[in-house]
Image 1: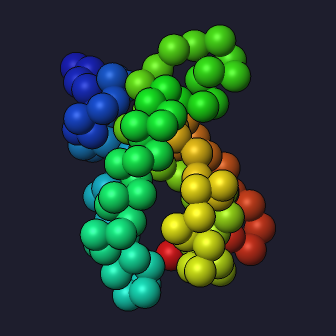
Image 2 (image 1 turned 180 degrees about the vertical axis):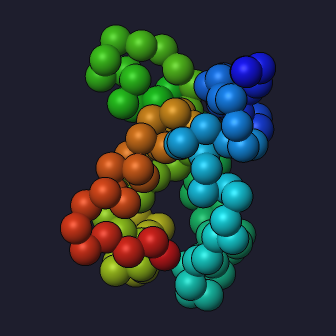
Length: 118
């Protein structure tokens, strides 16, 4: 069977069927984010803070701990935004991550009992 790359633009995984690898398969399904969280991520304030965080910490903090140098492209909340929306704009609850590490963190969270996307 012919192998091809995952349809996610940042992924180099090879797959033999479907459009996405296991990590990105969720892209085949509609994504839901509650309206409050969606409004937060679309706000100018969040976009400015995200840009400031990536300027302050341009390298993936997880990769850095492993001795790798990888550009960060994602800003991750270390506390669930849906539970602590008021702390969503506090820099101490943010970490800069590369796409790969962010995907791993999210996958681990989704595997935790009681975790709800949001």
